[in-house]
Image: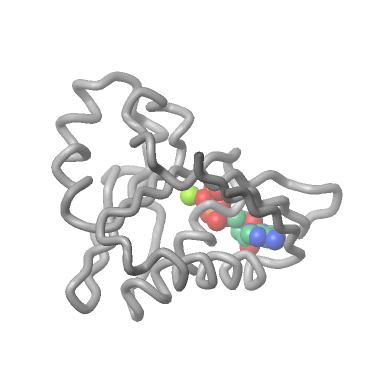
Length: 142
Ligand code: ADP
Ligand code: MG
Protein backbone atom coordinates (compact mmCIF):
# COMPACT_ATOMS: atom_id res chain seq x y z
CA UNK A 1 0.00 0.00 0.00
CA UNK A 2 1.03 3.58 -0.57
CA UNK A 3 -0.86 6.73 0.33
CA UNK A 4 0.25 10.27 -0.43
CA UNK A 5 -1.03 13.42 1.23
CA UNK A 6 -0.33 17.10 1.17
CA UNK A 7 -1.04 19.20 4.27
CA UNK A 8 -1.08 22.93 4.96
CA UNK A 9 -1.05 23.02 8.77
CA UNK A 10 0.03 20.98 11.81
CA UNK A 11 -3.65 20.30 12.50
CA UNK A 12 -4.08 18.72 9.05
CA UNK A 13 -1.00 16.57 9.63
CA UNK A 14 -2.45 15.42 12.96
CA UNK A 15 -5.74 14.60 11.24
CA UNK A 16 -3.99 12.44 8.62
CA UNK A 17 -2.25 10.66 11.50
CA UNK A 18 -5.44 10.13 13.50
CA UNK A 19 -7.24 8.72 10.43
CA UNK A 20 -4.26 6.40 9.89
CA UNK A 21 -4.40 5.39 13.59
CA UNK A 22 -8.07 4.48 13.19
CA UNK A 23 -7.03 2.13 10.42
CA UNK A 24 -4.24 0.33 12.29
CA UNK A 25 -5.20 0.60 15.98
CA UNK A 26 -6.35 -3.06 15.99
CA UNK A 27 -2.82 -4.23 15.17
CA UNK A 28 -1.38 -4.84 18.64
CA UNK A 29 2.26 -4.69 17.53
CA UNK A 30 2.16 -2.29 14.62
CA UNK A 31 5.46 -0.51 14.00
CA UNK A 32 5.48 2.93 12.40
CA UNK A 33 8.89 4.03 11.14
CA UNK A 34 9.10 7.78 10.66
CA UNK A 35 11.49 9.59 8.32
CA UNK A 36 12.05 13.30 7.80
CA UNK A 37 14.22 16.25 8.78
CA UNK A 38 14.13 18.28 11.95
CA UNK A 39 10.89 20.28 12.00
CA UNK A 40 9.24 18.16 9.31
CA UNK A 41 6.32 17.31 11.58
CA UNK A 42 7.12 13.84 12.88
CA UNK A 43 6.16 14.67 16.45
CA UNK A 44 2.98 16.38 15.20
CA UNK A 45 2.12 13.14 13.39
CA UNK A 46 2.72 11.12 16.57
CA UNK A 47 0.37 13.50 18.39
CA UNK A 48 -2.35 12.55 15.92
CA UNK A 49 -1.63 8.84 16.38
CA UNK A 50 -1.76 9.15 20.17
CA UNK A 51 -5.06 11.06 20.06
CA UNK A 52 -6.69 7.84 18.84
CA UNK A 53 -4.52 5.07 20.36
CA UNK A 54 -3.91 6.60 23.81
CA UNK A 55 -6.30 9.58 24.10
CA UNK A 56 -5.25 12.26 26.57
CA UNK A 57 -1.54 11.38 26.43
CA UNK A 58 0.80 14.35 26.44
CA UNK A 59 3.05 13.78 23.47
CA UNK A 60 6.47 15.35 23.47
CA UNK A 61 9.66 14.52 21.69
CA UNK A 62 11.67 11.90 23.60
CA UNK A 63 14.96 13.30 22.31
CA UNK A 64 16.85 12.94 25.60
CA UNK A 65 14.99 9.98 27.03
CA UNK A 66 14.92 8.10 23.66
CA UNK A 67 11.53 6.56 24.43
CA UNK A 68 8.23 7.76 25.93
CA UNK A 69 5.44 5.39 26.83
CA UNK A 70 1.84 6.57 26.53
CA UNK A 71 -0.77 4.34 28.14
CA UNK A 72 -4.24 3.79 26.77
CA UNK A 73 -7.10 1.35 27.33
CA UNK A 74 -5.33 -2.02 27.11
CA UNK A 75 -2.66 -0.66 24.79
CA UNK A 76 0.60 1.23 25.06
CA UNK A 77 2.13 3.47 22.46
CA UNK A 78 5.94 3.57 22.58
CA UNK A 79 7.33 6.74 21.04
CA UNK A 80 11.02 6.59 20.09
CA UNK A 81 13.35 9.31 18.94
CA UNK A 82 16.38 7.54 17.46
CA UNK A 83 18.28 10.73 16.60
CA UNK A 84 21.07 9.95 19.07
CA UNK A 85 21.29 6.23 18.36
CA UNK A 86 24.19 5.13 16.19
CA UNK A 87 24.76 1.46 16.90
CA UNK A 88 22.89 -1.63 17.93
CA UNK A 89 24.30 -1.77 21.47
CA UNK A 90 22.88 1.68 22.14
CA UNK A 91 19.56 0.72 20.61
CA UNK A 92 19.40 -2.53 22.56
CA UNK A 93 20.02 -0.75 25.85
CA UNK A 94 16.95 1.47 25.36
CA UNK A 95 14.79 -1.65 25.53
CA UNK A 96 13.76 -1.15 21.90
CA UNK A 97 13.61 -4.86 21.07
CA UNK A 98 11.50 -5.65 24.14
CA UNK A 99 8.99 -2.92 23.35
CA UNK A 100 8.31 -4.34 19.87
CA UNK A 101 6.04 -7.01 21.33
CA UNK A 102 4.52 -4.84 24.05
CA UNK A 103 2.43 -2.42 22.06
CA UNK A 104 2.33 -0.12 19.08
CA UNK A 105 5.70 1.49 18.38
CA UNK A 106 6.46 4.66 16.47
CA UNK A 107 10.05 5.74 15.82
CA UNK A 108 11.23 9.19 14.74
CA UNK A 109 14.60 9.19 12.91
CA UNK A 110 14.23 5.63 11.67
CA UNK A 111 16.91 6.63 9.12
CA UNK A 112 19.41 6.04 11.93
CA UNK A 113 18.65 2.36 12.53
CA UNK A 114 17.72 0.80 9.19
CA UNK A 115 18.79 -2.66 10.43
CA UNK A 116 16.28 -2.55 13.29
CA UNK A 117 13.11 -1.57 11.44
CA UNK A 118 10.72 -4.54 11.26
CA UNK A 119 10.03 -5.81 7.73
CA UNK A 120 6.31 -5.28 8.12
CA UNK A 121 6.61 -1.70 9.40
CA UNK A 122 4.49 1.14 8.09
CA UNK A 123 6.84 3.80 6.75
CA UNK A 124 5.83 7.43 7.11
CA UNK A 125 7.94 10.01 5.27
CA UNK A 126 7.32 13.70 5.85
CA UNK A 127 9.00 16.44 3.85
CA UNK A 128 8.67 20.19 3.72
CA UNK A 129 7.00 21.77 0.73
CA UNK A 130 7.43 25.14 -0.93
CA UNK A 131 5.71 27.29 1.66
CA UNK A 132 6.20 27.36 5.43
CA UNK A 133 3.17 25.22 6.30
CA UNK A 134 3.26 22.79 3.39
CA UNK A 135 4.17 19.19 4.02
CA UNK A 136 4.17 16.08 1.84
CA UNK A 137 3.36 12.88 3.67
CA UNK A 138 3.83 9.41 2.23
CA UNK A 139 2.56 6.38 4.15
CA UNK A 140 3.60 3.03 2.74
CA UNK A 141 3.99 -0.59 3.58
CA UNK A 142 5.60 -3.32 1.46
P1 ADP B 1 9.83 16.94 14.00
O1 ADP B 1 9.36 16.03 15.07
O2 ADP B 1 9.79 16.33 12.63
O3 ADP B 1 11.16 17.55 14.28
P2 ADP B 1 7.71 18.68 14.95
O4 ADP B 1 6.44 17.95 14.77
O5 ADP B 1 8.32 18.73 16.33
O6 ADP B 1 8.79 18.15 13.88
O7 ADP B 1 7.59 20.18 14.49
C1 ADP B 1 7.00 20.53 13.27
C2 ADP B 1 6.97 22.04 13.22
O8 ADP B 1 6.51 22.46 11.95
C3 ADP B 1 6.02 22.61 14.28
O9 ADP B 1 6.54 23.82 14.74
C4 ADP B 1 4.76 22.83 13.46
O10 ADP B 1 3.97 23.87 13.99
C5 ADP B 1 5.33 23.24 12.12
N1 ADP B 1 4.44 22.95 10.96
C6 ADP B 1 4.10 23.85 10.03
N2 ADP B 1 3.31 23.32 9.10
C7 ADP B 1 3.15 22.02 9.44
C8 ADP B 1 2.44 20.94 8.84
N3 ADP B 1 1.73 21.09 7.69
N4 ADP B 1 2.48 19.74 9.46
C9 ADP B 1 3.21 19.58 10.61
N5 ADP B 1 3.90 20.55 11.21
C10 ADP B 1 3.89 21.77 10.63
MG1 MG C 1 10.31 15.21 16.76
